[in-house]
Amino acid sequence: MKPEQPLIGQKNFFRFDFWHGVTIFALALAVLFLIYPYAGMFFRSFTSGRTGEPSLENYRRFFTFAYYYMPLFRSLRVSFSATFLAVLLGVPMAYVFSRYNIAGKKLLKILIVISLLSPPFIGAYSWIILLGRNGYITRFILEVFDFRIPSILGFNGLLLVFTLRFFPFVFLFVSGALGSIDSSLEEAAENLGVRGLRKLFTITFPLILPTISAGAVMVFMTSLADLGTPLLIGEGFKVLPVLIYEEFLGEVGVNPAMASALSVIIVSLSLSILLLQKFVISKRNYAMSSLRPPVVKELRLPKRIILTISCYLIGLFAILPQITIIIMSFRRTRGPLFVRGFSLDSYRNVWFQLSGNISRTFLYGLIAIIIMIILGMLVSYLIVRRPSRVTSLIDSLYMSPYVIPGAVVGILLVMAFNQYPIRLTGTGTIIVIAYVMRRLPHILRSSTAILYQLDPAVEEASINLGVPPLKTFFKITAVMMAPGVISGAILSWIAAINELSATIILFTGWTSTIPIAIYTEILRDSSGTAAALATILIFATVLSLLIFNRFTKGKGSVV
Image (cartoon, rainbow, N blue to C red; front, side, top):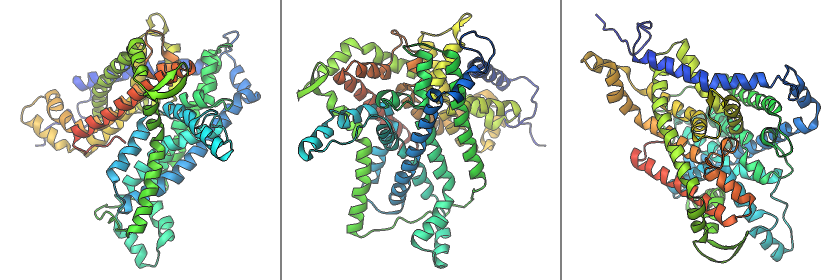
């Protein structure tokens, strides 16, 4: 007689146990921190900013006045352009990396990962130092060649920063996919006379089209949602996230109702792009065994040197902002200017003036990551092992912040929790909640992915031997889930400590974090202090990666 499986499956659903309690708790959290804020923002978008009465005024103004709809077109322009260039850069580099014996692949991948995980607004600040109106490269070219290069501020700067910052998404996704293709498919094509570029465009690239599109969507949505980079480098090229920020916290005047309408529009756009990508890929999905991965081709020395140098130039160019920031953090400063010589003055200023920002950043991040790990493991177990309509709804709700820009998350939380009985604005708690909302999807996806790979028979055997289901989860299942959970957790941790878009809406003087301090110091022309703070973030990111690789013995992945 087959034993009952109360934990795994859908039997005995109406008998209350620990997992039913977890389901109710997870659903209650979703209602409080997701459905309630979303609904409030949605309904507020249909109210008049002047009278508070129900009205279509905000949407009418958006579609009528260029001041409102032009930032949307600018956002689409820069996002589509950055996505195109990222694919153009990332796919060939991934092909060379995965198929040929270029030298130093581990080092190259480290450079790419570090450039990906560093916050984009740091890259924007670095390029201002290098290519701004008085930047080092700008002055050098003007003095030597008597030529003034185009300004880095505006569309050109946004495109440069987004392309170099986000092409690693495409590179890492595609290089992984190219390494898992069944080589027999390409060999069969060669036997039929299909070789060279024709084989690439008719066999190889169609097979990995889902992966290419996934990387492209990541680039598009991340560049569409970014706020810090346009604030620093956009100048007159105002994009939609900046307009939302100004409507909600502008110096001239605020209009929360209009900010809500703009937020609804950008979220709808992000969701539409994601659904479109899923629809297109559903028509072009292929299955293969991956039993015979492609063999890395041995190149002759001249070609190997050329391809290796080309890949490293791209990698070094991508990580140039981080190198620049680190060097500038040790430069002497006189007021807003860097002068000759090196010193630790910037770090002394940080220690005496901004140590609170540093401690708060890591404290909020640590609290958030503990919550995300516990919640992510429990919710992912519900999704995979106890599937139902309720757990499917929970999965959709918890993944929804994935397509929501950080500034919108900040606005959601301020509007929802700015009055009693739950008043959280101005506290560290609301920043922790923002971290959890924005970054929990990473842990959920990595945790569910590894749970699907784990055989439920192991848990069933434990339960049949008399181990209580709850103890089985914490002693066996949670331990087996650890690699996937840690993979998502390290990415969530790094993203949380580098978060600017949400915290710039939520912070006060008592809850300011390192990214907020960097942005503030840049506006104050305290370049040395800003560079020192950015260097601390960079080293925290690298240290997190080293700890992660040590813990997983190189078997995990952060993307």
